[in-house]
Each structure stands twice: as C-alpha cells, then as structure tokens.
Length: 101
Image (cartoon, rainbow, N blue to C red):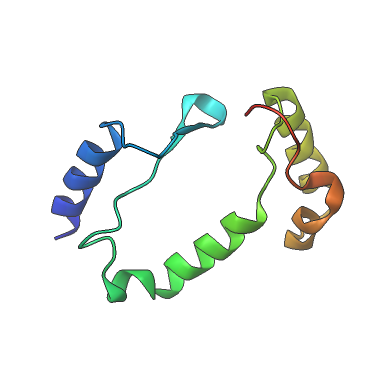
C-alpha cells in the first residue's frame, strides 16, 4: 500500500492544484500538499505518532517565511549554535517575516 501511496502522491504533487501555491524551499525543493482524500485522510495515518510529531514541529518552523536563502541559512546557523532548542522558533525574531518567500 505504501508504494501505491507514493505513486499517487508524486502524481498529485506534479499537477498544479487550484488554490494551493507550492512554496520554494532551500536546496531546490518545493513544499507541496497532498489531497485530503483517502488514503491521506485516513485516521490511521493522521493520528500516527510520527506524523503528529513532524507536523507539530513543522508548524513551529517559520524560518523560511519571508526570508531570503541567506537569511534562512544564517537562522539555521544561529539555531544550531544556540543549542537547537525548539523553543527558539517561538521567538518573535524568528517568526513569520513580511515579504515574498
């Protein structure tokens, strides 16, 4: 079933979706969105401990929000050298920044 999900996700992510804007990330990657339909909306997947942990940590990370690649890289360096605490992402300095991504 996982292999089938990977194929479906790849096809979905490669097709522009109305109302969803892919977000550019570092290293030539793009943040995409899978459809909220089976199997992606399955309770066993949405409530899986690993999925919940990743989502919770990701929601705290606004490092890319409105920052250039250089600003993002410098922020990562500062986070790592400060001890890599997740609380660091909650500071107002590293919250969302106005401007284009």
